[in-house]
Image (cartoon, rainbow, N blue to C red; front, top):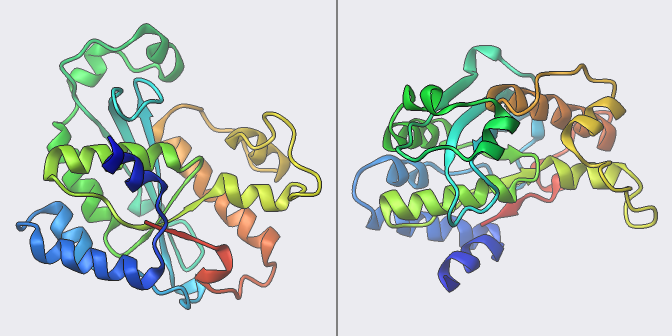
Length: 240
């Protein structure tokens, strides 16, 4: 338990992150997680326009990465500060467990739908390949990161180490900051989209939520730096 908590809470300086990733790549057998850690990540000095962001969203059976399960994943890329829809990806994850009624009500996925999904090992291999060399972005990213940590330890026996950004944290800087903290619910994904004049999408669909987060991310970048001429370090990314 302590190791898992440390993985979620520790933020590594970039040089330590790179060293730890290299060591993992050397230690791990060939496979999806080894290849992910072997691919270098952008340095903090990289211009934002040169970064490739992978915006992800998971649909799950609950909010506890220790006991709940991922049943759907969505990912869209941001390249040159634009969203090429050809790079969008969505996958259902099969699970032998019956889905809790409360989660089915939220995301609309049923036992029959999920039963037609791909095995977890196949979906994770695809996801890790799509994340190679990219900066992970999510809304309230600690949830996705918690599941990624557990799944990588479960499947590969090693941690998941990346550079990541949380659109919820970026939005907090735009919505009042420390002097005027946001009101309850103001930092929810679709409430923020309304604030920035973005259109409505179907909620609680992994692909649509990933696209919604990607569009919000670009709106937040323009709000924080209208010239869009900043560098990755300006966004204060997390490394760990």
